[in-house]
Length: 324
Image (tube, rainbow, N blue to C red; front, top):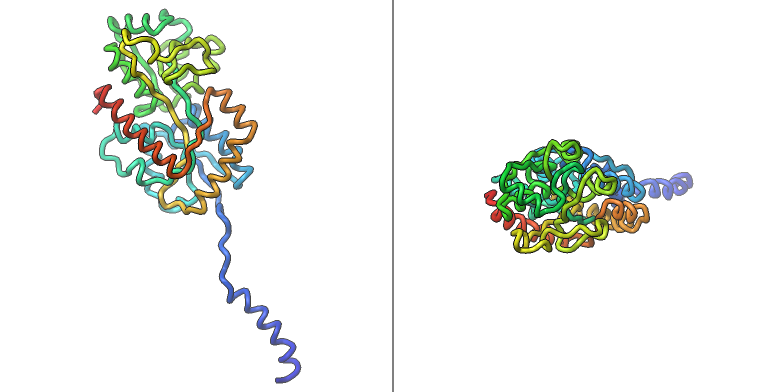
């Protein structure tokens, strides 16, 4: 072999070695992550999603929030379930609308449990039975008495929301006359409640807590099994006595991140690790306290089981409210 060839041979071999070795895939995410909010801006799901997205960016890079309201969250949920291009970088903030939708809208093209990856539950909150500050009703008992003789209106963030279902259940259990007035999210529903255009709502606590504290709304009861530390003196509907027909009334809301079932396990693990850090961030803990929520703990299979149980619960509620 000629000397010049002997000198060049190691260089030529070295130049080909990277081509012969396996190409290393870039770590997830390799693109912008989209966090879908199935409701209009201004409500609890939207506000929470924007806080989570802001803190997630510190861990995984750019996260863009997209509002896709419609049909009690089933429009956006159906789009997510179809997967397709960008599915590995698309997540959604699910809430009870995810499990109520199949009860309200028959023959949906997706299964709320089987067709999704369940990343992590984030927070749980009660709903609050609230009336305008100038309402003549200062107790649940007074409201029920009046609602048995005249038609009342109750607002919600949309058909199939936990707010809607709480109102329907209250109506069914108390035998009151109430007409549902749906809006495109709590951001649109609140002005009607504050102005007195509707009589009552069973809103998520984060959407109404500041208005209760400022005196613009009056809290009559909470929908959780136990009192909320954020509303001292406000009793749960279930504790107000069987004489009102509300002994078994318990409805709460959860909010957690889900993705299409095609999302890679690597992406799910990365998101779970990032969310653990988000949940420990002092600013997130302060945020949860400010909106009257409690941090949740389920992720992966445990979160999936939790959602499956929620499907069963809302099916029972729909039966009690005679919505089926």
